[in-house]
Length: 314
Image (cartoon, rainbow, N blue to C red; front, side, top):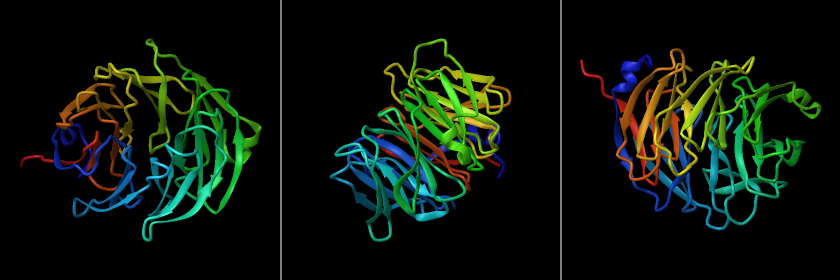
């Protein structure tokens, strides 16, 4: 089934799960699209079976808390996540036996960005300690460090060769992984008309666009090669300055974001037109939103988790 504006407009919530007592802070799909995992401010990690459409296991990280949970490259049985309680160490967890495989110490303040390489065992993290660190899952030692002088958010490109980092909500810097220590090879400056903080960066899967999310009522798409502004999307509720996650659809043709009032807004990346507003019946702001990389479904979450399916009538 092709992702079209009509198909997206037909999406409805198929299942809602109330496994969490506090907000779900992150959702990620396994690389094969068959599982989803969530982390929550109530210190729980919930594993979902996307084929069966149900939660299958709950794990806890009571001591450290859990945030920014990510499946590792090509593996649906291991995850990496940041802490939001005791310390700022990143943890590498086996889901099969609920044991830590490795710890990645180094950051001295909260980790606010975590991006896994799509091609190998490297990943990057950005922290309020004003550093971006490069890691390898096979070693607890930091493989590289840059001080971009500001609060950084960062993300790998789809080929895993470069990563983008934004600094102080005004500049995007592009780094080549092979010459990381030399500093950025390109920088783009872009300013929003309203005062807001950038909260996330994502590349489209075709590598041609960069999505900037903010805690204001706007998201923006830039050309990944020259930094020109392609579209700025607004018109969704975020009066309280919540960090709302946006994402591309896997075909890079659409952008979607949740809102403070529990609705999901969608735009075409080609025309820049809004193509749908869907009501998820969420009880609070949609903090996190992800489209499945392989299947025609997406997940949105406040403190409840909703899985959506298209309902096109014949």
